[in-house]
Amino acid sequence: MKYSMNLLLWGNQIDDTLFPTLELIKEIGFDGVEVPIFNTNPEHWFSFRKKLDDLGLQCETDTICGPDTHLISPDPAMRRSTIDHLKKVLDCSLVLGATRLMGPFHSALGVFTGSPATQEEWQWGIEGIREVADYAESLDITLGLEYLNRFELYLTSCGDELIRFVDEVNHPACKIMFDTFHANIEEKNIGDTIRKAGDRISFIQLSENDRSTPGKGNVDWEGIFKAIKDIRYDGWLSIEAFSPKLPVANIWRKMFDSEEQLMRDGLAFIKGNTLH
Image (cartoon, rainbow, N blue to C red; front, side, top):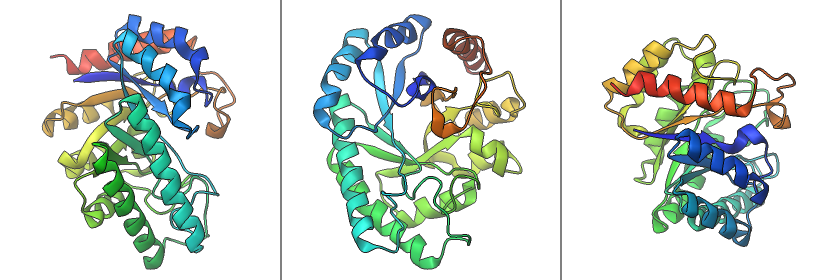
């Protein structure tokens, strides 16, 4: 098993000012980081890659899409520009040395029609992700698609929907990234959902119900860790926690003492449930 920390805990400004944070992440004992890609200029990431290499930290990447990058938009020009945007994100991921690009980028965060996804929207998503997956495969990168809860996304908002979506994309470079926060809202049984997704899962984000320190809330961690063992998953386990530094998360109160405390306690909790 490998252990990672998502840099969104420090907000969406990902640049050289985070170098001391990377040093702390390494010192605490993480194997790698999740780097969110919002800046799609590859040159922005060269110094960040060098710092990761110097520290011996591995890296996987994430991205989200907003109203202007909606892969299931009725506007074909927006669908085309979104595919091109995601290819630029993949180019940045390549600079960082990532082998996975993850997130709910099959559609836009916070964009709703007031109705369930139509078959046409579903098909636009399938076709767009297939093209992105083709490009990702050419770079030796695998997509890890994520579902979000019903308040953030409508194309896929539970495990069954995302499993069906990925199965219909039917591409070797398209897998699932599983996030326990959204599962805690949407699933009847999180462990059963993990078992159903099985080897489609290429990355797991461990996130508490309030986005604070894993192990300090009401998520069914016993059931989750049992399911992880049941599917013989041996990849990345990453802490995804948020704070008021990330406005898009709408978290306006701090629910932990410090980022360092969250990381130390969270990593100890996760290792205590996996290293035996």
